[in-house]
Image 1 (spheres, rainbow, N blue to C red):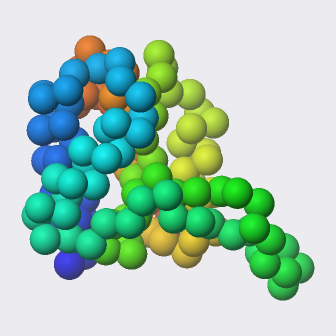
Image 2 (image 1 turned 90 degrees about the horizontal axis):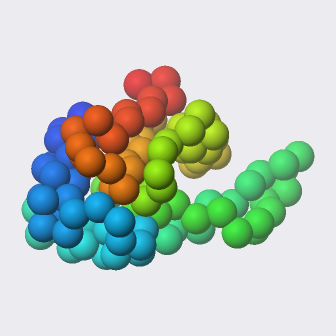
Amino acid sequence: MTENEISYIIRGAVYTTYKELGPGLLESSYESVLKHLISKNGLIVNSQVPLPLVYEDVKLDVGYRIDLLVENKVIVEIKSVEQLTDVHSKQLLTYLKLSDKKLGLLINFNTANILHSIQRIVNGL
């Protein structure tokens, strides 16, 4: 599957999750439900994937974690905050660069309208 096809399935799971749970829960709740729904669609989903930082050819384990990695292609970064800021999208772009992935979805579940709270971040796609 392409990143775009995977993204379509993820977005469907996001809408279902938001419809069923609503806003205001912890990020970990949304992460668990999303992982379950995406897996039900036949995709491989890993959660809390370690993301090392490589600096001057030295691999440093500094505690970065990808919320969800779908099919080893698409990063899903989950937030439950009052408002997304530029630093959230820049963080996801940095994760894409460090992991050499091309597509990420930044999702804020603490919102009145989930349709306006999904950002697609690309790295050379």
